[in-house]
Amino acid sequence: MIVIRKADGNDIKSVYELEKKCFKDPYPEIVLRMLYELYPELFLVAEDSETKAIIGYVSGMIRVDGFGHIVSICVDQNYRRRGIGKRLMEAIENVMHKIFSVCMFRLEVRVSNIPAIKLYESLGYRVEAILKNYYLDGEDGYLMTKKLC
Image (tube, rainbow, N blue to C red; front, side, top):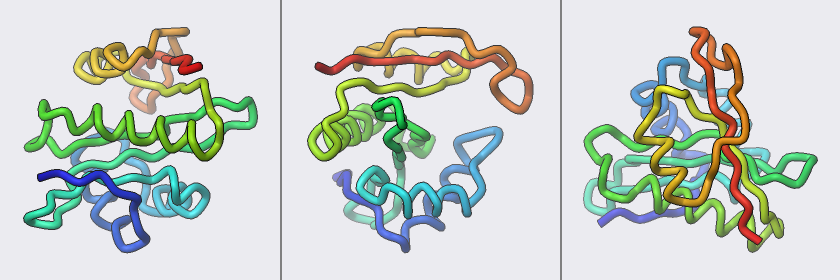
């Protein structure tokens, strides 16, 4: 069984290892720790209850314009296509809405990341803009937003 829970400081090393597996340009461990320290309630992990392994995570922050910003989401390749990413997204949106009264969400995604784009669209996100040369390798990104209420 997979449990979605609030991260604790001891999870950051595991999250960093997962980050390196998921992304071409992973966030450094210090950035992940900063995100956790700034908004600990917006740093959630997916844990395999049998092995206690961290197999996914999502982090977010509240922007000054009131948007809930999904900073990063990642699910271990061996656990994908099981609804874990969807559960993580729903969980962080729920926390943002209940604790911070957020009704608008945003995220950025590589234009080539079709599985992620489809997931976000299934959750109600829509492409708002193309972000030219957004990623370090020059790939464009999509800015996607969602209005909850």
